[in-house]
Image 1 (cartoon, protein in one colour):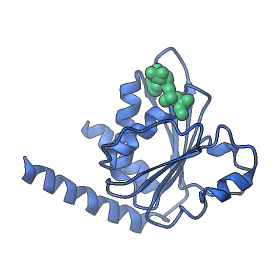
Image 2 (spheres, rainbow, N blue to C red):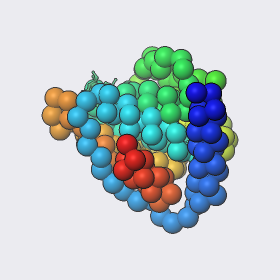
Image 3 (tube, protein in one colour):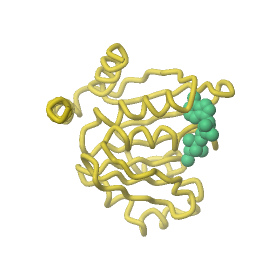
Image 4 (cartoon, rainbow, N blue to C red):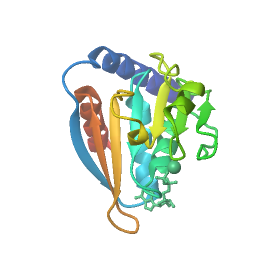
Length: 182
Ligand code: ADP
Ligand code: MG
């Protein structure tokens, strides 16, 4: 078992490096993946977490109950973080270590002024290594922060969600590959 896990890990790290090198290659591409349960959204997040290069910044958008936090839980799992992911609604940020890279999870639902995110160091958190995930990233004034990946979740039924992902081609390619292999 340990050997399998080890080689799996090596494979993922090589994939991350390759993606990092290709990161700036080409404009973002957009695609929509429909999920039919919270678990499916989690699994999608997990795939994403396993392939995003270190330093990736993600904005996750969609109304209350869309499934933003469900997706972030998956991203954390994909990074190998075992801690329980909370909704940082009241304190704006939660930080998780112990995964492949530190995960900084922001929730701007209660953001009242830009000074708040400066004070909690959100912009400094973008350091080329941290994975920075921002729920309600669309609450930031236009041009404040450029995200590598923008995800917009739309509620289309009780358990159905349309997850629209805009990401560099390398990430979109990797996602497709993982979908086929699932
Ligand atoms: P947000 O962070 O966007 O406010 P949460 O992830 O906290 O949303 O909650 C999403 C809610 O929607 C949960 O109660 C979850 O069980 C439910 N849900 C139903 N279907 C889905 C789905 N396909 N994907 C994600 N969440 C879903
Ligand atoms: Mg949330």
